[in-house]
Image (cartoon, rainbow, N blue to C red):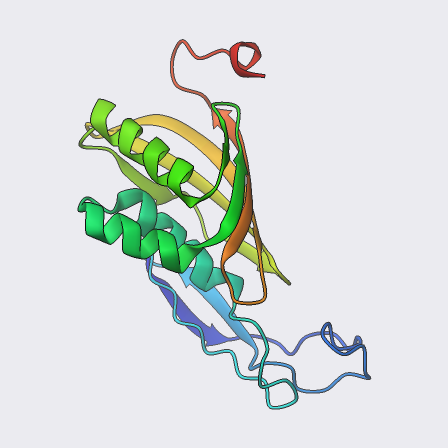
Length: 180
């Protein structure tokens, strides 16, 4: 999916999420719309009151999708370093992983079994504060293999510290109880 940034109504008058002060311009009001099936998000966030405001969570979602689709090992390593915090953890019905290397290894094992797979967003990811929810699908050979939802937690640098994954439509023959 490609996302186009367009103006949105101003946010409601509530305290600033970073400093708890009365409302002020914390960022340019933006809204993303899905246009195509390749993910590209442009972050136009500005914050004159907080020049060290963390990156927008949507950027982490974009890097996350790119990581799962990176074919070359050097691209996987580069994207992993940009996307995940060193102590990242991932909890899904398939596996519990700790650390960047375990995620890279899992991604590599999956790609060995399904070399022509594509990991993609099913809809516009939802983000707020340091969280993102990505509804995804994995397509293998032109057919949906599985769908799921990943909830991502980010650090102040915009790197993913935790992934909690759910299978919305598991692969055929997969039982949730087999992997608790």
